[in-house]
Length: 175
Image (cartoon, helix red, strand yellow):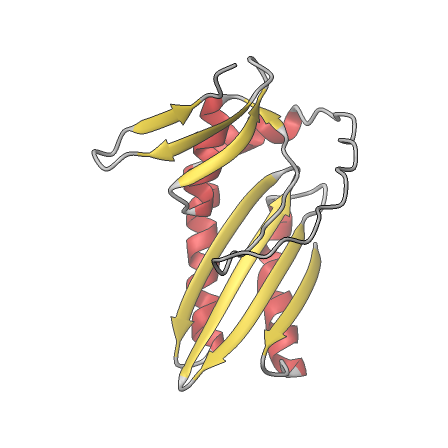
């Protein structure tokens, strides 16, 4: 597993990095093809916050925990990610076996600078063709309330979201 440890407004100590690498090595048995893990450590007053994101074959596992020490936050993240993996184990195994390569998307034109009235955080990620069920699974794994994806059946960019009543919604562009 490729692990990158990032400290936000702090330097992460070598013993903490070694502990993170040792604990994340536990997930190598779930991801034999290799995975990329990004660990972000933040210190906010007396509170230590850790965020772990593991990416494997387009599937993301994410956990964020706060505690009085980074070790306790790491333990919380580990149990959360392990719970996500176990909960979705059969679906993930099926998906991992059928990893299909798709052509790389063309590079978009460079966006022009414009003055914004709002403070906007921009995030980009590759859109991978998937079914609505896979998109809902990915949204739940990330713990988000919505997820943007490329629908493999309709060949459109769509969004799934979780409704207040617990059901799911699908937004499809109209042409």
